[in-house]
Amino acid sequence: MLKTILIIVLFLFVAATTAVVFLQSSSEWSPGDVVRTPDSRFENLPDYPFAANYVDVQGYRIHYVDQGPKDGETVLLMHGQPSWSYLYRHMIPLLAAKGYRVIAPDNVGFGKSDKPVEQSSHSYQMHVDVMSGFVDAIDLKDATLFAQDWGGLIGLRVVEQRPKRFARIMLSNTTLPAMGGIKGWLGYPLFRASVWNEGEVQELNLGGDSFSFTRWVAYAKTAEKFDFAMLFQAATTRQLSGAELAAYAAPFPSEDTLAGVRMFPSLVASQLRQNQAVMDDFYAKWSKPLITAFGADDTLMAGQEKVWQKVPGAQGQAHTLVLDGAHFIQEDKPQELVDILTNFIERN
Image (cartoon, rainbow, N blue to C red; front, side, top):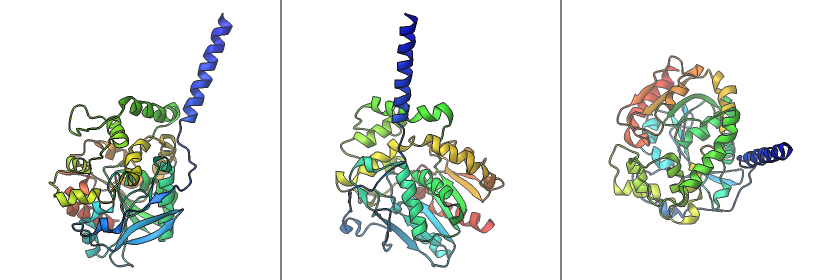
């Protein structure tokens, strides 16, 4: 009897271990079939007059804004989900007017960049690899990274991959989701199970008691209609116009353009162990300047700034909480962010 029990326990242990390993995110990827949003969707967007630039990187065409003097100090502005470079339309001319060269790319699946049709074509590793290739392709040098939301999840990994291309980092409302040890192994499978348990979610109340991150992930993945206007207005303190809200939805006219928007939230916990290794082996030793400017009204990322203020390069910097700044802080406080960023660069 005891032998039978031990065999059953061993079997269950092996099965559980195999399942945990199987459910980890793969680091292998290949480009998928893509669609491109018609240029007509981007005509006459408010405050977005910028010329389009394109570069091919690892099987995808990447769009980016390139403004300001080509020999100016370079600032790389990285966006998250479900935004695109339109989010930086107020910061770009302010920085360019101060003599900075401003680069604002669209991630694969967003804005004017190629959009893989299948959700499975998106992985955390793919986006890190492609954006690392992007900074190589444009030969980025001594740049300052400004990153918000997924711009940090990807951008902070790009800096780790290409440290010689970056001189400074400014973070706003972002972090690297990281866990080590057994928690790192279990985190993603448990996260996936929690999202599955939410079922299909057709409506989302971002400010309500029923809101949870896993509910947001399930909504992004399963809602028949992804409500861009609701999301952006709920995550800003400034009242956006109807034309501005429509501009955020402009790159996504049909379901086959939405794979990135739908998949990104599901990937947040997909590289917990890899991110922990980056935190331990790279950012624990990062001595170049790093500053945080988080929105005081962003409840999603509240407290994450403290993680980054422990990095060696963050010591002695003028970290701040930006009052009346919500998650999409670029909409709420573009001038203040530019002032913080340029003062940071000039002091360092």
